[in-house]
Figure 1 (cartoon, rainbow, N blue to C red):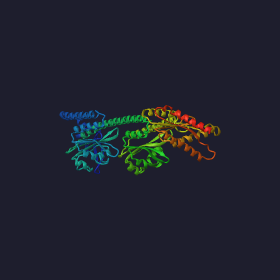
Figure 2: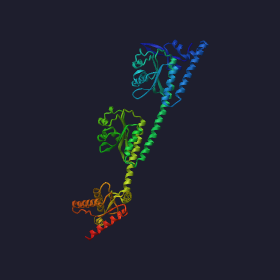
Figure 3: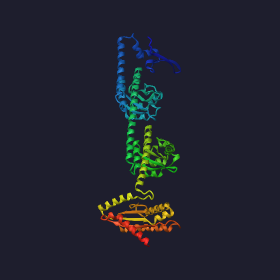
Figure 4: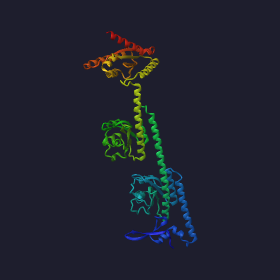
Length: 550
């Protein structure tokens, strides 16, 4: 009888043209090299043959029902979870169970080589050896290359080199592509240790099961990508919050580097800034100081410089394959891969944020996007800190001379008073008033007077210790507060200031303004500290009156 599902095509075999029959209902599975073989093996045709004995048809129908039940079991298994490993394990278990084979494995497609993500009935050594093969090797390579089902009935007699398979004691192999929406996700391989002839129905079932498995893998991969993206967004938010909390910290740069490394699972990081035509390491994290010292890369001839010049994220998966990477920095830094994103402010791109990996690392688009987004936040944080520091500077410093202002001096006096009452000791103060500043302003202009004030402020800074506080108290008045200083120490500072002014005046050019100031000094303990500033002020005026009389 004729079957409406059967069709044929011509093929070349051993130099001769032969007609190959196949079933359109199960296209593209070839069922035989002749019509008779096709009619004998195609279950669709056998079920259409109503001349066959009812008992035989009943057996065939039962077998088909079992096949559908088995496929349904696989569908239920692989769709029971969105966790990728669970999908792979359950799908592989069901295929092995229903096809009654000895072993199987699933290899997912990677960038350089397949990765055996699940295996049953074979050793771990064998699974590792499969993952080390390139795409063009073994049965996995054949399936990837052909994108079709591959059957090897006898491993020993196969023209394809399969040394690991022979050592594992496997005799037959069937490799089926795992494809979803035309995209190859991986390869399913089933195997037996004894001889077995695979029928067209076996191949059909393995392919149908693989289609369901591929669909479940695609969903699991999409779900995992969403989880990874969601996790990245969560970590990015946490990193941004950490930066905002650290705006007032002097270690903001180090915080940025630690968060950048944590965000993309890097081991080291560096804050690179442009100085002239060089790119240098301003701050480092888990890198040796030798790296900071040697890090001087030409902006226009380095990959990190390219990130700054072009405003783009630059990644290097393996530094050994990139000629623009400085081998000395690689050796000192001990890294094998790195990712660099530009640091941009409203003034332009001024540096880059770089993260380093100890091993070769294949960067994903998500990692590049994460670091680029974080670099934008880091640049904003650094700019905000700079603005805050400028604001703080203006709040406690005198705008003309750069020394502390009166408000800060009063706070420092209060702290010194509390410390004296609590712990004892002495504190000294020097009160200075520029002589005849009004006359200078009237004769030479206020700019000349301002220069004198700035000169005196700079002179006081050079004469005092780091612990001393130099402040501008009023228009022409300055105060030097000296914690933990007795009268003798205060006299030494006072003498040093007077000597510095004399030296300045001797070295000044003819016609230059003379710098002169009257000084008053006082030392106090906790009992009379409240009168510290007043006493010094009175003594300064006493000195000024004495000079006028002279």
